[in-house]
Image 1 (spheres, rainbow, N blue to C red):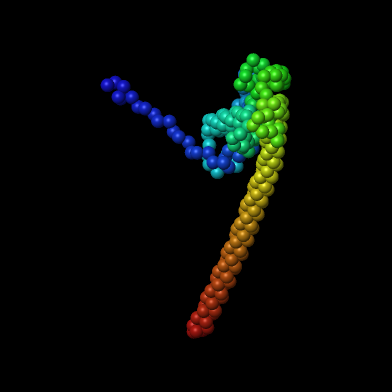
Image 2: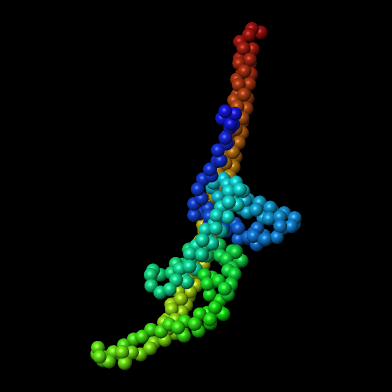
Length: 274
């Protein structure tokens, strides 16, 4: 029963990240990613990482409309790296598949951005004795020699009938099929590289366009502030002139009253008997 009196604090859930916030975080991280992703753990490196994260937080907060904590930025960066690694793993697996089936996958633009920022995180270790790893040159030569000596495909030459079909069978080495598969893989790699370059160019264009829009917005905001300041200054100046005119009119009215009183006094004196 004692445990029922404990107060359980529910973890506060942050707002979902949209595509614009993720793109902004990547833009802010590009300048400091070499410091943040440094694998050293000495004191100076840790201090540099703290300073870098603070600068990323400052840049992100200045440009983002939603308030985010530093812990949210770190967690989102880790999530984006994990998603990129999963995507690249799926792409490599689809490329290694044999013929048939759908077209091999291509990395999405976000994965390409993360790959260009931290390429060391996507390096693959080679192992000659691992049959599931990406093919090493030595493994390629071993597989080629063993497959060519064991496997053969046969084709029947045209004009054969059922009687002499066994005599006219022409062996077609597996080497031709292997070359065809290699050509298909090479084309898929070239296509993936073209997609990567195209995506990078489109991302640069989008970044340039976004920066242009931000600069134009800032300029318009500055012009609007200057216009408001000029209007306020002119209004204050006009109000000041009106106050001066009011004071002058009151002064003139006072002088007229004084002169009126003087005339009334003179009139009264003239009416008095001598």
